[in-house]
Length: 135
Image (cartoon, rainbow, N blue to C red; front, side):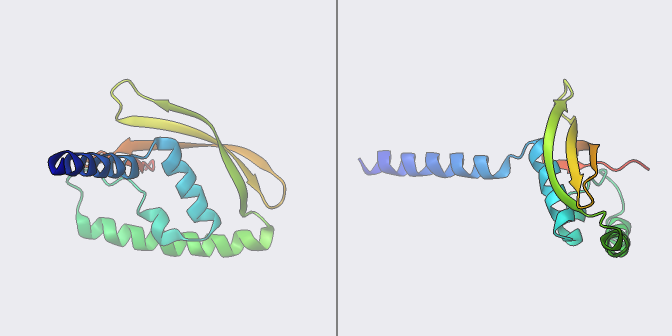
């Protein structure tokens, strides 16, 4: 009986961990827009894809620069009422390899404008969905 209880506990723990760690591309895109809406740019840049083999120090510096840039743009946009008010997922397409995805979102800004935004995502080496910025 103790072995069965231990097995069930281990199984439930594994299921819980799997449920917590697996995010869909849509979940990541929604999280990103939430961070932008909350002006939480440090957490936003942690959602960005870093290619395997990329220089870690350079990637860190690039992220820090992006945080500063986004904060400056946010200040300008708040004066124009160009901040994100709400967002919702319209569609999610994952490629047949399951490594890349495109999420289309409807974004509503404080000034009332609505826009369809596309977010490209790619799985990192650990299998987590990350936002892939175009260069």
